[in-house]
Image (cartoon, rainbow, N blue to C red; front, top):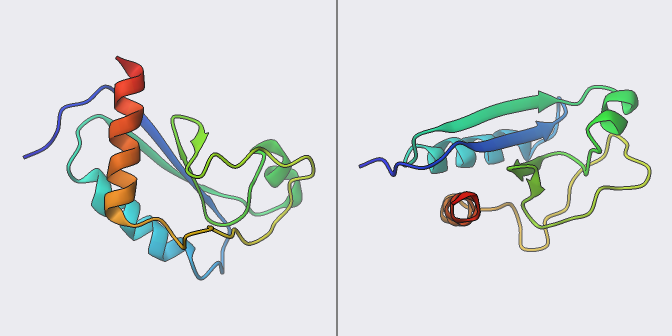
Length: 107
């Protein structure tokens, strides 16, 4: 059963060759299966100029309604770099919980 929600914007930023990007992409897609009205996009960050433009926090970065998954602040000098998640890459259930939290904030 899909959970009806307001539109939640999910953006996954990454660069080619990042070993963690495919893993997080699959987890995000699995988490989204339980929801309707998800606006999902992947952003390939392929230059330092693009990194600056999206305030890149490293690959892979997961934003839900523009908020970083771990509430990491935008860097002063964004660049192509790997992302470190304090507790490891977010799992499917963690991502679902963040989507539910984002949905509540939209009400």
